[in-house]
Length: 129
Image (cartoon, rainbow, N blue to C red):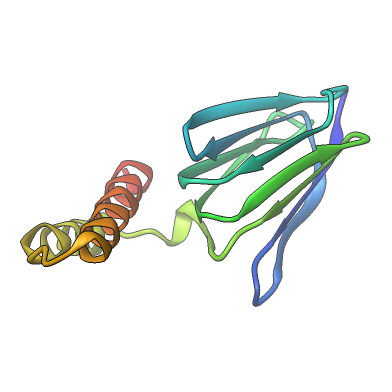
């Protein structure tokens, strides 16, 4: 059975279709959602969002933070960025990874930013293959 999924960024509504399954990168790992799920509110992490459509097609997006809510068979994902996997480039992602790796850590904030940038670049590299 399918359910409605909506993915929204500050710039646009990226996705609005029925899906059979969604696999979301939560802040503490991946979580799969199916139709009939009890209500849940999640804090998103950085990583791949997989949306399995009822016609057996799959769409992948790289999302970066935000929240997701499943309620009454409607999944709403609010994120700062949702990039289709088809738009990701492995070479530029590898360059982003090396740049983040070379960045000096001077305080806790710079550590957290570098860690975030490393995770994002790693997800891009994995999804661009």
